[in-house]
Amino acid sequence: MTNDPAGGEARQRRQLPMTIRHKISAAKPHAAGFTLIELLIYVAILVIVSSLIVAFAFWSIRVNSNSKAKAEVQNNSRRAVEIMAYEIRQAQSIYTPTSVFGAHSGQLSVETLLDAPSGETKTYKDFYLDDGKIYFKREEQLPEVLTSDQVRVTNLMFKHIDPGSSPEGVQINLTLEYNNPSARPDLAVREDLSTFIALRAY
View: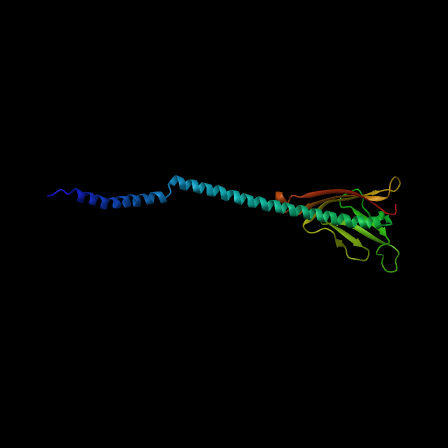
């Protein structure tokens, strides 16, 4: 049999591309796959990121709820005090026979010329607490609720300042809390308010 060097070289050249293709195709599955350690790392990272997102969402909800509760308490206390202050300033005198001073669940009655019934020259207006709400009662009219169902008044105390040593007026001590039957910490909002209102007549 004749030894043909040229023919052998040609066969080697034809076989070389097959060998390269075989090596490349054998390496592809290993390069495209994940090892068990890599998969565990990816899962751990996904769990951590998901936990952070959930924690941030709950934190945002609590902060938003707390802000709304604070706004509700502040708006109610401000509205109640503003109405009481207006009526006290316009009053001719503090009507002591029906007022309750120096104790919780106090009542304040004022004698005023404003909104007097037909045929009358003066009238009486009352502020009092009932079932955790502040009520404003005009003579011959139904009482008006000054605070909403979202808050509860836990303290309402009036103190009559006698005109003997200073202008006659009323010291108001007021405490409101957000209604929180489920005892959620983010809804545990309370506001204490103390103010003095003088009658304009003095």
